Amino acid sequence: MKRDPPPAERQAQEEDAGEQKTPLWIFGYGSLVWRPDFEFSSRKVGFIRGYSRRFWQGDTFHRGNEKMPGRVVTLQEDYDACTWGVAYEVRGEQIAASLQYLNMREAVLGGYDTKLVKFHPQDKEADEPILALVYIATPQNPTYLGPASEEDIAAQIIVSSGRSGHNIEYLLRLADFMRYFCPKVEDEHLFSIEEALISILPCLCQAENPSVEV
Ligand SMILES: N[C@@H](CCC(=O)N[C@@H](CS)C(=O)NCC(=O)O)C(=O)O
Image (tube, rainbow, N blue to C red; front, side, top):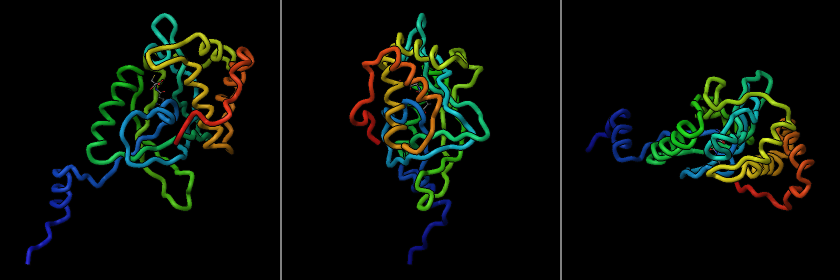
């Protein structure tokens, strides 16, 4: 009778056959919550601890240009804070494809580095915390802008657009995601920028239905 191969050999065989059983999870908290643009096997809404989401990263490609950089989000270490977003599960060939795509979109074009964090699915009864990869723009990256008043951030967003679209879309889609998928979560920084933007452009009232599908 044929003997089953030992676990290591079986794992190697599965990997060779591209049937990698070990998934990779990628946590998104900005444009990735509404525009992942890579193939994934599943996704979960949830949060990471110890970070605040801040519109402190400049963007000279996707939502701005060299002369007028846009403002996109990064994560600021903040012991008591949580940042909500979406974690995407990638398996097998999806792993290399998603990392190759995100390296260009986030690292090369966006100035983001990678870090491993503990992701907490919102359905904590059903799901254990998961180790996930996250892209963070640190103050050392060349397009980092740092803190500004919510009014000044809103004014910069209003006049910025880039290859992926207007900076206003970036803000409103993120605000829509939080409003509709994390309705109980306070995000003063995000919603005060949205409020400042709407006070400058009253026509940008909240959409009737979410512009974000998760
Ligand atoms: N890393 C954050 C932020 C990602 C982000 O917004 N990055 C910009 C790069 S500067 C981007 O991908 N923009 C694409 C777009 O604006 O549609 C996330 O996980 O969502």
